[in-house]
Image 1 (tube, rainbow, N blue to C red):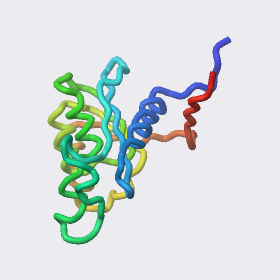
Image 2: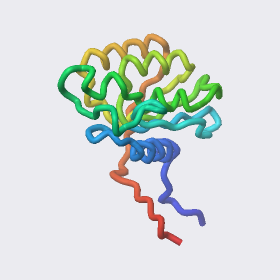
Image 3: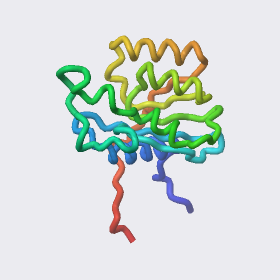
Length: 162
């Protein structure tokens, strides 16, 4: 008899996105993304961080202060990194799993790349303009938006399990 306590596809792919977020060096917000094609194959992952060649020891991680002295003009969001990390693989009709609802800049890239569904865990910035704009653009472009509802509180990765 097969086991019955396995995770769903949604939980699996969101788990990969959460694992990717653990690579982020941002002290305040760690976000990961996982892009899956229509065959349930992972085609790319990403997390929020600085572009290649921009040292995370030389650029700011601050959230406040002069705009140029904060992380905001420099950090590449998880969704954008996942799209760029696909390196030309078609994302047409793919699903993006992400820990945090996408901002308006990422929404543009999601739409242009052909991704047709966004599954997210948190929408904590829903009342900010950039996220209202994002939701409007994604919806009008026909991108399905879905909050992941799960009873799972945590997943454990055990490197010592045999």
